Length: 236
Ligand code: 3PG
Image (cartoon, rainbow, N blue to C red):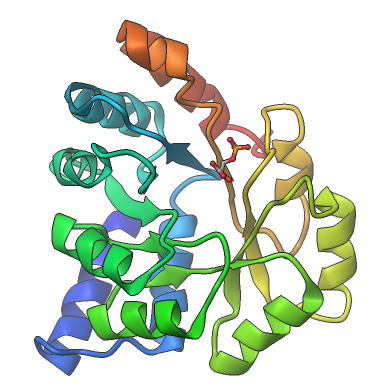
């Protein structure tokens, strides 16, 4: 049902704006809010070996984590986005967007959302021009307010633990309750529930559901189990 909503949203936007649509901050946040609502955890993935991409995505989606962030940190990342995008039920985005060229490449590879550690004017513009909904990183009240001023009220809180964790997010939420966050960076199975319990947190990002050793060993059953466990965090 939620997945259908996203498809309808994207198609409606394309009809509205045509081929060369510019995505407004409000529409970008609406699309990302739907994606972030699919599960409490968005896996943050570093794919080294393209042959692992599809089975990794299948394990995570089957385990209950449909929204996947593939970081642009390896030569295999763009091909991984292409391969993972073919997995039914998955919604694949690109992480570690730093330059407008990253945005173009991610969009061309089929990414449906973009994630960045911070935000620059050129990166924001590139995402709007390419129609790639951006989840931009912010770590302070001023950074969050600058994004809010541009129309972005859904942000990534990064690096979450190093920036003060749940205490910082709670403190930022008091004067700025209109901003919602996806905290990422240092989130673990142990602290995820505390983040998800905050009123200004919609989901969290984390790499623990796809440990490098399990990916290298091709232990997809173990990764599916990790995903299944993660998908239930904050729900009991
Ligand atoms: C990252 O920078 O790779 C992401 O924020 C994920 O961080 P994590 O490995 O601490 O989950």
